[in-house]
Length: 166
Length: 188
Image 1 (cartoon, rainbow over the protein chains, first blue to last red):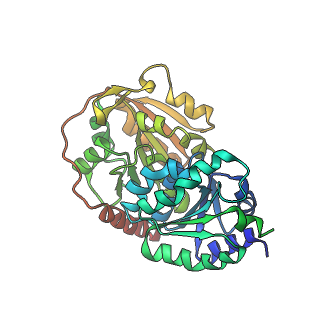
Image 2 (cartoon, one colour):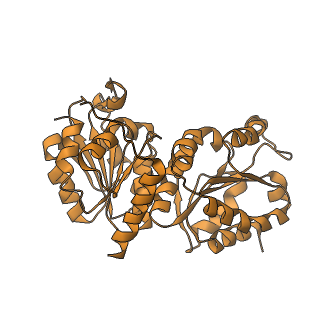
């Protein structure tokens, strides 16, 4: 089974029905699957903080929601994370393409990668780093934990995770 | 008429709707004049009222009114293409356009100058966009809710504020009682 399919199956098993995305090259396979999978309502967002607003609304409407985005989005979304998602105790799994790690070809991506974990730690957001393809097995538990705790969680998926999963 | 007058004028119209209200004075005015569990007050996060409203409308059946401002829509202008391309027939976005950032001291917005938010919404693909005068807002909103199709209303009004107290509800309480109301209305 492809790594993309493992991710969408885990989301579905955990009753995530509403997914918003802002694309990244590493996420193309997951986004393709989501779009054609009628277990999900996929609403592409123009910017990640907008996506977090959509997710907050969907959650309050009774649908578990998640966002799929690149780690550069952490810079865009700090206010939405703190004053909406955390302040109102809204659960939000963030499946994050961790660009700028070993294997990266675009130097500028490293500039955000070096800040990613520090920013998430500063925000008190539980953070999980998927480095090997088998790490995807942990996703079920992480999603259950997220909705139990009503907090945002970050799942950072680096180039080795995606590259080793072909 | 100023925004506060519009908010008071629409209270009888929004009874059957879930309301997501913009940060700052709009939420404080709605709280003061018509607090109820079916109101979701934004205490922070400028710009996301329309996004929260759309997500809510797409996730459940009850009618949803997003009360937004011109400044907040300009902050999150990407919301209009998303609204246009993900049609929720139970969603009405009411943009109260006073041409200023009211909660921060009435600094002018571009919507009060050369930029027409109604024209922007149409260009983004929103099919039903109505611009109205302040005094026609309640009637226009009632028509939109009765019409059962997604509508963007731009209500033009004067800038200006009246003193209102801050909202003293805990955010988790606002969210919790709102979600209980969502469940109740969807069970009806």
